[in-house]
Amino acid sequence: MANRTKPLRAFHILTGGSALLLLLLITFGTVLAVWSRASVQTGMGASDWAALRFTVWQGFVSATISVLVAIPAARALARRRFPGRQIMVTLLGAPFILPSIVAVLGILAVWGRSGYISEILAGFGGSRLDIYGFTGVVLAHVFFNIPLAIRLILQGWVSIPSEHFRLAAQLNMSSHDIHRQLERPMLRAIVPGAFMLVFLLCITSFAVALALGGGPKATTLEVAIYQALRFDFDLSKAALLALIQFGLCAGVATVSILVSSPAKFSVGLDRAPLRWDGREWWNRLFDRVILIAVALFLFTPLISILVKGVPPLLRLPAQVWPAASNSVIVALGSSVLAIVLALSLSFLIVRLSGRRRRTSQAMEALGFLTLAASPFVIGTGLFILINPFADPFALALPVTALINAAMSLPFALRIILPALVRAEGHYGRLADSIGMRGFSRFQLAIWPRIKRQVGFAAGLSAALSMGDLGVIALFAPPDISTLPLTMYRLMAAYQLEAAGGVALVLVSLSLFLFWLFDRGGRLEHHIR
Image (spheres, rainbow, N blue to C red):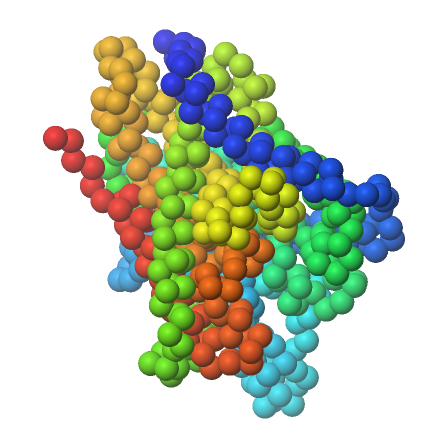
């Protein structure tokens, strides 16, 4: 029974296949559309090779630091209970879901030449910090991605059944034994995927490299694509760089999937895990130090944004509130679509894993394609595809929701798929053995085991959509705007005080949507 192949039903083929076709259209279809309009085929120049090297190196360093910090921080959150713990877990999503330009302003307020750290150093006779270039890019990417890595790895710790820790306590196992027997197998399953996701985010980053890159020596592929489209209008070069980015990201995703090995734990009773390990004084001290350090690093820039954004709140321009409404509508639609796509692909991947292992692995890799795609190339390609049939500017909000859902899909898939694999492996087989089928099988056997991950993924997708600027900037006519676009227009008009207020509204709404969905996934499941 343990190795029984799961039946592949027409429903899974239809839903999963439709999601895959939509994904291929948004990624390869848009790149081919841009390529078809290119007049001359160009090769890679010296600056392009330099951009490729810088992209890979800063991505590797940023992802390594993020994951190495996230592992002990996630373990501390998993085995400690303290007042405000749940608030801290929720707020950990704040840096990652911040709009990039807002977060960069917060980082500069702390680490820039006029920031708090530089002021302290200057007060003691030291030199002020210069974070532009490689250092600034890595610092910003670590700021963005440590929270995501912590949440992904924390989900792995929560997935270890409570009964395993109870048995470990009865056997008087040491903290080292628990790490070797329980935590290390989980980390082997979770960390490669987390590293890959952070690496992909770092090598496809645009706003951070543009704001903090510091010149041609610190240019990423994404910035090079933007320059080719915006300044040179060289579609051939943009398409070539986009394909190189595709290949690089696809290779990273493939290696990650091949390296990952699922953690094989027995079935638990879905109780919240209680920890008896790590009670030595040095473990308690280390957990406190790592949590305090992470909190200071992440929350100080957020506090600076709050301090600067409160005064102008009562004097915001009238166009802010319609823009806020548009942002919320786009975020909700994007979140729902991203979850539908992620669930459809996840169920098809799980169903294929028993009989067509290589096919399921290939589909899992394809699920990360949008991380490899440049939003500028996707936007330009969609403009080319839509223009013969409809006015792209009239479809600004639906197109933005669609692209945001596709860009959120890799995160949702990385969060939901491992939980679905465990649920199908344990409770799905039990449900099949007693003849459960259809919606009842999903409601009673599968949903209670994946709802926490679905809620987290939905909140993350909604928050990411709230902060998107690139897609809407390509399509929006003057009379339609979202909060990020409104903030950008205010900054361009040198209305920096009003832009600070809009930034605070944007952060507050993003956090609220993230909390709303994440909290919904953690509510108790009652079967009626």
